[in-house]
Image 1 (cartoon, rainbow, N blue to C red):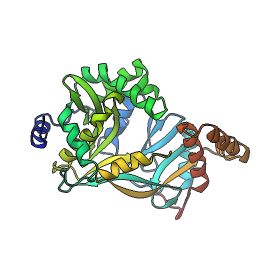
Image 2: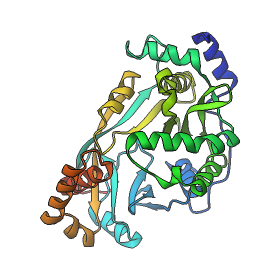
Image 3: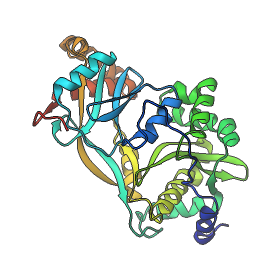
Length: 330
């Protein structure tokens, strides 16, 4: 049985947030906020552009999202419209406190004392059980390549979704190559012997540790590999004096009450903002047509657990609500 002390010692001997240095592509400024994550995304085949005082990356559906996640933007609508037209994007999404939009937030935990007594009382026995069954350390490239895709497929089945980047063997190989080439990307994982039960992809940049992805094997969930992984990575990050905060991503555009509760019980605070959405002018009239919106609502009614339809419906709502409170560009 591993005690908390032994696990803690083991984590420091296998640094979960270790740094591998590489050179950014020529078109992304080295010191520009978000450039580290932008480079990781570029290596995975995502388009990255610089406009309106920020870096933007393309997600499936030809939407652009801003980087880094913790930077709130206030772009001028005309400049935003020009960027959308020039890039041919369907639309953009960005966090703001100066635009209206969807109520959203970023899960953040700033540096502070953190131990098993810090987290919610219901999480403590789950973390302790995870400590008894799993060893947390950095996964090797070979381990992530060979075992990670099965964890991806297991997670996506549970969530009722499919992302080819994590499910397609060729695209998964590209992802892993990018993770082990790009600056400051790490893969902490929970193991039973040599078998991986859960993993994370994390990114260090400008004093923040971003938890980007987390996947796990369904058959191991009874022993709480995700809980011990979240606790271990968070604890080590908060003990690192070079880091000021840990970011656990955005609140999703679809209902995920269990995920929200999970993150907040580990001490993460929701930093509120508006998720502003602006569509391409040629798309806006079509997608915001009442007949289209009615069709989306009907599709949601017939498939209440369809995250894709829920996300489309939420995006359309966000586009209708989003406008600048003060029209000025940063």
